[in-house]
Image (cartoon, rainbow, N blue to C red; front, top):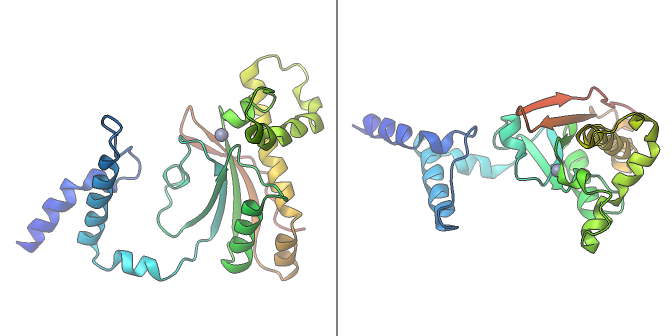
Length: 226
Ligand SMILES: [Zn+2]
């Protein structure tokens, strides 16, 4: 009976544990749907393994630090299919790493020095609004300031845009170059240099997620030592 009940509940909640689907749709902007969905989801885990959440709560040992865009269409766990405890994540507009930004620096320090992740992945994506609006002078002030370094990426690599007239192609190139710029900046940080000096295994990768196909592309620009 208990087994039957478990199976009934498992299959009843099967969609709730399937990360590949969009699980909750807001009806009339009712946030209650989110809370209800969360409760059903948590219960489905408890039914499968009573100690699942208590065990997870004990510690984390992720091997990957993921820097991605804040865009709602690129949730790292879903597109990577990596579950609880496997990704340490920082997200912002256009997946940038900025030396003067405490949020960027502190998450990198925590990931590399304390969690000892072995991979840092900077993941850009196609049709990135941050990239598309990098040259928009009409943005609100903080946003304008935030995306401004992307203009510098363009200026440094201007030659790679020769003959490119289509805006979409322009943005695709800039997305990739922007990822490359971030991994170079990360490789130059004190915490990463110290890790390499101590022979800590650490590689910094550049990836792009293609919204149109749902696939990740390894740009093959990995930096794994100073
Ligand atoms: Zn984006």
